[in-house]
Length: 194
Image (tube, rainbow, N blue to C red; front, side):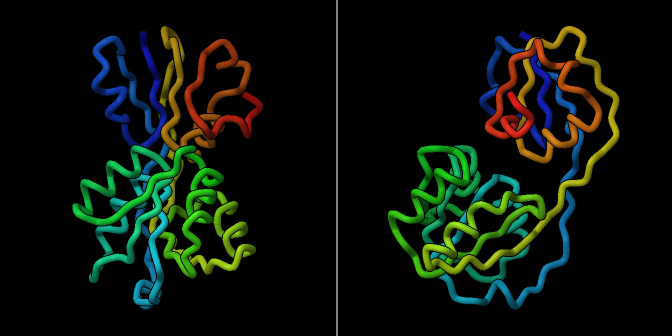
């Protein structure tokens, strides 16, 4: 089966599957943005991680150990946390969405959390947590930048999107009708009616 992977990187679960032929077309690149370093010194009772990319960018700016536990949105983010921050205490949401992560955080009710994130991260998490009395200190670390790339859907059996920004970039180039016949794997395409 030939899979078109759209996003900054190919997940290991796909890359290691010998039954798949992978075509990787990122459509976006992730660029770091300047941050106010003093925000990293605000004391918190944990750290929210909503993507493996946030984990990688966060590692690059840290001067002191981050607040534990890490609340991870899913298994790929958990794997990145274990690799980049060995020995750190982490908890992983059962449902790989911000809503699933909110449920996990509300079970533990920390008073405040640091959230290193993309500039394009969904706004659900801070809105809900702050209504529940949990302060969320947001640290935008990187921004997705759309890249014009040539890509053919000929011979593709399935689409796989690795992040919401990849969905946005893909649909800048293709129409729904172009891909309506293809199975799509992603938790983010529902905003487009799939």
